[in-house]
Length: 119
Image (cartoon, rainbow, N blue to C red):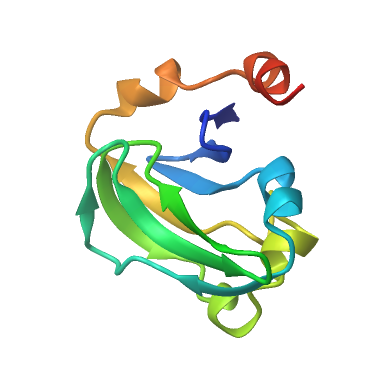
């Protein structure tokens, strides 16, 4: 698993990359009440705003950690956005992206680098 400075995590899953927010980000946001997701088939460049996460505290942008096409979204978040807080790594993922440049994954932060960032 890799991380971004914007507190997203990315996990390789076959030819796709699964994207979510870190436990740290979920705690900072507070209770998530709504997630405005991208559409499957939409294309984004690394660094683009992809989704909006609304919590009881504020609204926050989810930044695309990689360039590519949205292959799948986590539809469970429509019915239960609290999954982002309850289980941000497994059940609270946001989307899967088919990367147009898989090498971008290697340039993301390692677990150690991310832990140094948030400490």
